[in-house]
Amino acid sequence: MDEGRVKEYMDFVQSIQQKVNSVGSLVSGNEEVTPFAVNRALALYYNTNLELIRMYEEQKVRHLDIQNDFEQWYDEKFEECRDEIMNMYENVGGKSVKPAAKEYDTRVKTKYSAEYNRRKKALDVAESRVSYLRKLFEILKRYDTILTTISYNMRSELKSLSIEKRANTDPEKNRVRRGFPSREEIPDFPSDM
Image (cartoon, rainbow, N blue to C red; front, side, top):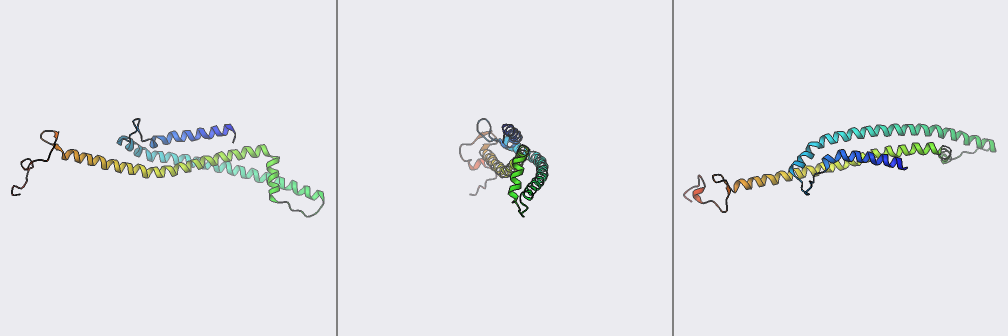
C-alpha cells in the first residue's frame, strides 16, 4: 500500500474510533467507572450501533462496486491477453498448444501493471474497511455483555449501600447508630420475649 492509501485508511479508522469512543470510554480521569459513565454508555450504545451498521453497509456497497469494477476490467484484459497469447502460439508453429490460465494472468499483471496495481490497491483498501467494521461489531458485541454486567453489578452495589445506610440510620436523630437498638427503641417489639 502506498503512503496516501495508508493515510486515507488510518484517517478512516480514527474517525470511526472517535465515534465509537463515546460508548467505549467508561473510565474517568481518576480511573473510576462512575454510574453516570455506565448509564451514558448504555444510552449511547444503540445509536452507536445504528451508526456503525450504516457505515458498514455503506462501505460494503462501495467494496462491492470496486470489486465488480475490478473483476469486469480484469475479465476484459484477461480475454485480450488470452487472444494475444493464442495468436502468438498459432503464428509460431501451428501446433495445438493450450497455455495455462496462469500465463494469461501473468500477462495481464505485467502488460497493465499500473492500472492493475491501482485497481487492486483500491480493492484492498475497500476490503480492509469492511473487515475493520466487522471486527468492531465483534468487539461491540462483547462490550455489550461487559457493559450490561457492569451495570448490574453497579446497581447491586448501590442498592446494598442504600439498604445498609438506611438500616444504620436513626430516623429521629439523622445519624448513624453505633450499636444495636434496645428493645425499647424498636417499635412493636414483643414484650414477652
